[in-house]
Length: 84
Image 1 (cartoon, one colour):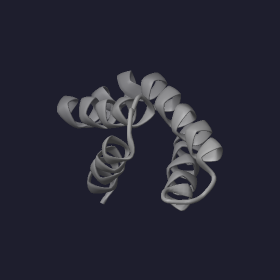
Image 2 (cartoon, one colour; image 1 turned 90 degrees about the horizontal axis):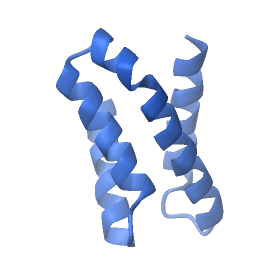
Image 3 (cartoon, one colour; image 1 turned 60 degrees about the vertical axis):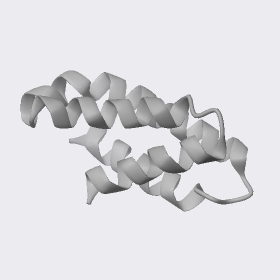
Image 4 (cartoon, helix red, strand yellow; image 1 turned 180 degrees about the vertical axis):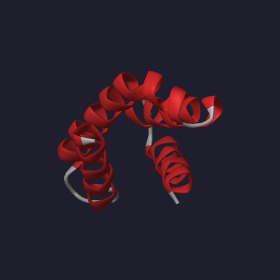
């Protein structure tokens, strides 16, 4: 439960810093979301549809390793859709 709250706060903070001037903070938050999604993947796979857990992890991975703004925005859009 506590880990879910941390992940939710990370996602909310990440959305707040998307398109902001603070790229360093955004990078820091995306790194931690990627780490959290990796740690939570087995639990996501058990609790939800296997594909849903994998898709969320892939989106976090794509966000963390985004090479340009376009890739970053695509990954953010995927995460928003999955959490909607």
